Length: 588
Image 1 (cartoon, rainbow, N blue to C red):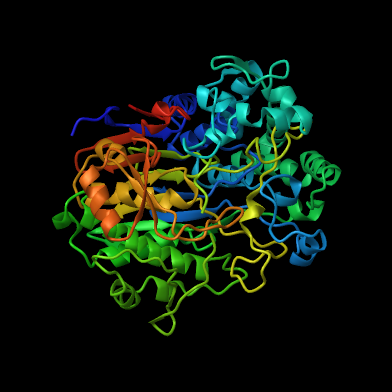
Image 2 (spheres, helix red, strand yellow):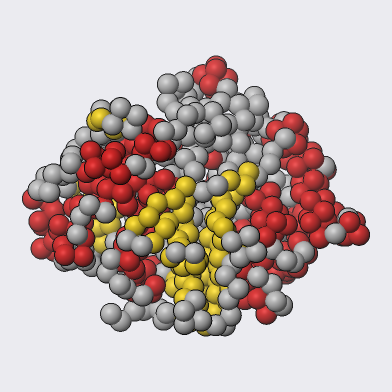
């Protein structure tokens, strides 16, 4: 089928990211003989500068890496951790029923830098100075702000256009009246900058240079030790002291021990086979296994025979999502604190039992979690979901030696808390995803990592790396990514066709984000899907919300075709059309 963006193809390397400047940064690293991990980390650092409403270094960065030198997939738990002082009793003593969605009470340990540094040291080939140079230059010299960051006139901020609510324009009054440190960076004489205006962040540039000074001082000890010296300055040195002082001054709970004890976990990913492809996801501290649960449910149907985006196909995929996400709500959490029955959840026996609950002609309006231990069904409590706003980017890369990486950086959004005066970035608000209910698996606890929606994906065919992909989108991430994957595997679309195909999502289950509401039966569907299909879905009991033609999804993907010696990449035009972001894939 014709596509708006071309399928990008090459022989040596591919990088795909949310902003053309970050993709360019990755391409520059490839030109200097860096590998896919080096390039992806460089691109992710740039994303934190040019898309600060979607991600900054104060946030998180889970990732999946296929490292050619070790021949296996690893998961990096780049998720934040709650401070030691963050207890349910403390929030209740403040009269709160939920962790706030913004401000320092929602801030945990910033995890992104440690995740980037860990990946670079263990699986990259270059220095921190090499991969940080593009981001440093953009912070120091300035970058032309795009429309998605600055904001357009008359934005509703209700998520009708994904990401609109996080723009500078929609947060200008807050910056002016409450967060002067943010206003100094992102407002021009008190007003949002126009698209194309230069945004400079001198404090962020100085922060980067402090990291590089630490690395340079330890250079004689070797590349990895020098990167560790920069990490040590961030989490145990004067940068950590700046973070703790800022948190204390603004009502936060972070302490020096919280940062000093923090470390990115390198973990074994979870996986499932589907039609000859093995998909890898991060563990149940993310929502990643819900992708695999959906595959287990859907492998029992002939999706291709139903027809792409037919009423039968959409109904089946949505009903499977409802069952999988009900289990996410009932079981997923930090496995260091909660026993998550993953073996049962991903077993074919359990999936067969759950699959029988899907009524081919009627949409479920219930929240139906199962019991993967007793292999039975039970009902979970519901609540009420808000539409996705802003807050995540995606970076994917691969190279001809077989390295492949998918990173989903997020958090530390400029609408989430004020910019730290001396560092140029805000802390995140990921703790809003915790529950102040001790009975919930994702209940707040000191040093616990909250269940996150951030969910990179990586797939292999046999022993060969095949796909790396992902998307922003909160609870929709493993719905849109799933549809992309099915488009490739079941409907034999190329990457760009699979990315651009019309998509849909359900808001049926409780939202991960404040205030954790749900909208049972709601099915959001792009207007490009035929009206007769939408009418048939309505007749089956779905509450249809017709969305703008290019609003569901924001996929990025890279592919390695070892047999032909070709690499491919695709980027989603949706961001450019809304406009929110300007995704780009570059290859050579």
